[in-house]
Length: 173
Image (tube, rainbow, N blue to C red; front, side, top):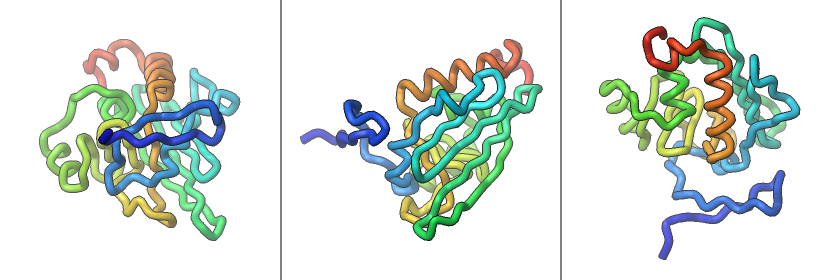
């Protein structure tokens, strides 16, 4: 029996993702999150959204990004957060590099994650929560995003366009 589950993506009914089981902190709506090409400006802002949540990544210069989330609850109200990422945190959260601080790794492991920075993000495989672990239930104000191949490619391109090459090499944080 396979440990992968199949999920139909609502904005593209032809697309079916096979994904591993999600960690407890991840809300199932995070599977539906996708980059909005219409709302994004790849030199400045990247929007990842679904009908229930939005994650906006804005380049601040000097290899830093502001990440804002907006999550709709069951009453139609929104919970919002805003956190800032360094180049290393961006790579750990959105890209697949294994460049983690051991203390941060131990904290992430307590919540079923591989990577994490307290109050900023937690990630397990391609399952990401910002600003941290949650219950994974409706009403949880954390924004969950499944980092599909397509989303990771667009995030990598956005990172390259909004961060000078010396940051890519880890020389400047």
